[in-house]
Length: 165
View (spheres, rainbow, N blue to C red):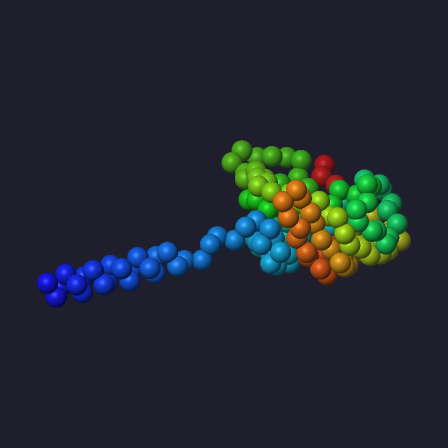
């Protein structure tokens, strides 16, 4: 009888521990805490992701010669935050090889607030004058379910103005 009581107490304790595990973070929570320190040079704009490429910021101009500062939202810029898998797969690449990973987007937020400052040196198109640094402040992104505050962020494009091809 004593063994049954001890065994019952152990099983109850194990059951309580199993239900106390933390919840999986939401995509919005993952995006808010992501370390966007991997920079992806290409195009007229900026891209950054975490090392795992599961959270990424894409901010690209629809014009060849944008004039900063840029205040978001701005209809001349494609500015979004995404969560998914292999988000920078084939970034700035127009040749897709068999077996290469493909970008999978699970959730997306449009950049709805913030400012972007950058300076393109004369002759700086396609990386000719060195990297271009984008400084974002007050950055936040919104979708129908949530808002993600990114605050202040610095992103480097070492191939500003270059395109695939």
